[in-house]
Image (cartoon, rainbow, N blue to C red; front, side, top):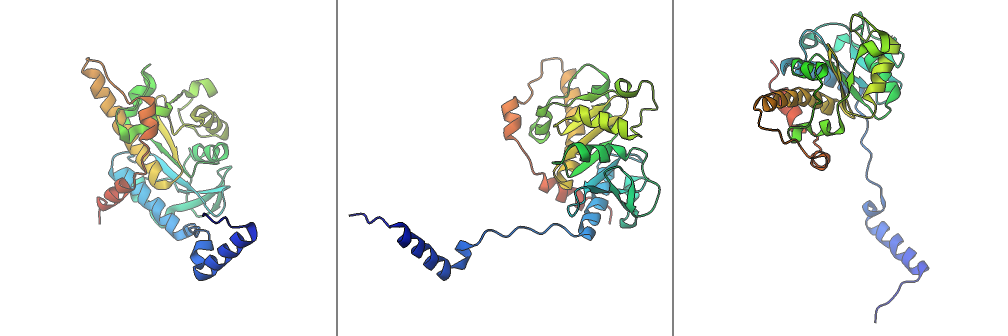
Length: 261
């Protein structure tokens, strides 16, 4: 005959088990956020990886939100990403005004501040001038996911045309209002192209945003090559793209191993 524990008996049993093995009664520990120095070092590495892998050249930038204060973010002072050092990292508020650090800021830092304002889920932002995405921002051909590493492209990659927000400009997102307009076009997606300029990419971690920026460019190159074959192109099905989510941690470690010593 099966015995059914009454509520008092069940409570007593749980108490006994918890006493014998307290681990069973404890919630899993929450990982501590990275220290400021670890975050700064990772941001320097991100700059160098993006430069070493050809995602950025003398221009382009990457930022990361401060995990200890979501209303602030870290971004290097203006300069070539390959040359960024920890001393170059500046902390900004979401108005993109410097809080700490020294050096002239990027004119387009408003890309970062306005996206962080609009997207509480975003932890890191890349702005790049990836050459292979430029044609897709100018032609009426949408980027579509070619392979699993570009799964996030299945969300859609809208095109930001600065003329719609400000008419004829120097093409730079150099004011808060232009940053807001770009964030509006990006919406809830991972990436947006910028006509005559490049792209912006966002993610929930620094490692992932670097990878998404890299694979956005690779996917664009593969799509251009496939289109030239003129035999029809089979892209990832939307459901395939949803199931192909990547963490890209191996990519990050591989790219780190390729950095100049």
